[in-house]
Image (tube, rainbow, N blue to C red):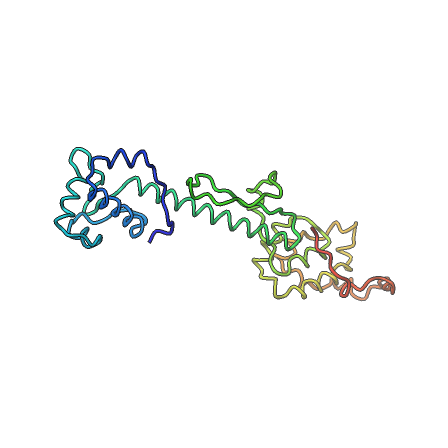
Length: 263
C-alpha cells in the first residue's frame, strides 16, 4: 500500500481527459486510479485482463468490458498498456514525487533531532528544521520556527552528535581543538563506558612535565589522545619520584567540584 494517503489532483486535466466518458465508465476509471494508488505504490498499474479488473472492482465483466472500451478509446486511450499491465504515468510521477518528499522530510527530521541532542549537551547548535525542496503542494507541513536562520545547515550536518560521556571529557581536557574529530574518535574507540577511567587519567597526566612544559605546548590534541588510547600511558621513569609542589589545601577537589560543560 502506498504510504501517502492522498495524491495531487489537477481538475483541469481530469475534466479534459474524462469528459467523453459515460457516467459508468467515469466511475470505473476513477476507481481504477484509486486502486493503483493504494495497491501498487511504485508502478501505479493494474492488470490488462478485463476479468481481473472486474474482480478488483467487484463489477460485472460485461459492464467492465464496455467501460474499458471507452477508457481505452483508440483515439485517446487514458491508460498506457505495458506488457500485461495498464499504467497511469501521471499517477506514477506523483507517487515518485511524494516518495522523494518523504525521503527529504525524514532527513530533515534527523537533522532536527541532532540539533535537539546538541542543545541538551550544551553544544552551540541552534534548533532548525529542514524544509525539503520539491515538496508536493497540498502536503506541506507547518515548518518549525527557526531560532537562527543564518546558521549553515550543511555545516551543522557534518558535526557529529556528542555521545555519552564526551561532554564531561571535553570539559576537563585542557586542549579545546578539533572537537568534531574528537567526537568521531570517541565513538570509534567506544569510550562511553570507560569515561571515568579517562577522566582519572587526564587528572593524573595534567601533572606530568610533558603537559605542563611551555604552557601545555606538547599536550596532544583530544582526537590524537583518544585514538592513541593515551589514558593507558605510564609516566616516564625519569619523572617518577620527582618532588612536586605540595597540593594547595584550599584548592577545590576536582572529583567533587561540578563540571561546567562548555556551551
